[in-house]
Image (cartoon, rainbow over all chains, first blue to last red; front, side):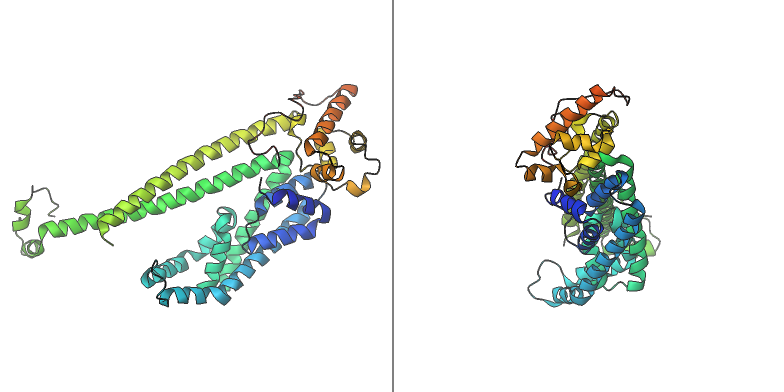
Length: 240
Length: 140
């Protein structure tokens, strides 16, 4: 259990709905608070009659959308300046300006999915994605619907699981948390695998070009079957 | 960066990511097993599943015991102000370790069941205040 959680649960029970709203808002704005666990606990207490589940769901959705919008605004206000500084600063020797530009283009292409998926599947990245979406900037009129759909899932899933499994909500939280880490690791592994395949293909092409030399292109275009450089090798290079 | 060096770095990172994926998959599987175990214990009314975050009304709801009976077992005469207090808060207020409070409640539930011929699922009492639980949950 998180360090904050016992204190959060005490406040949640003592002050009710306002504390839930505030907790979810602060967590969505980017602070490391386990909002999914708070929602699971709230669902469990709703089963025992302490809260109304039909009130909790809209409360959680509005709080998280407001928190995400705050993160987006912070990104828009200061994030773009930070990225511009990174691109131009001579102190930044770790990330090249071209790499930042490539990242920007790629993020713009996938921003909708990034916003949607980080709401419920990779919640640990939600705060950073909000800042990036604001800094890029990903238009707010596209950000908001992706955010709302994602947040509906991120509120309804833990609330209903907490409501269904009651006293076992902690164990459900462990399952959700470890599944999220698994999904993230799998995503990173598949992205790296696709990069590796692309790099291997480039390496193969480069090697073929190096072994054949400039003469190979000339000979192939003139219709000859073999080149000087390929004759020197074992002859198993792709000539076609 | 040289393409060969880049592919070696990518290969190492991929191995690390695959390792992390396997570890996460095993952790998820274990968490599911733990959840099923805990769910079975709760469903059978095992008192060892009482946790410091629970309130007395919550325990009364889960273990089908009257709230007032539980308050009496904790020697609380006026329950209204502490209705929303967790066991941890109750323990702090009475300057007792939270495990003592849990132990008192477990004993009270077992006595209540004996007196009122428990009609729920087969009762597993586990060990009072010390049944198997996930590591790190002891103080949660």
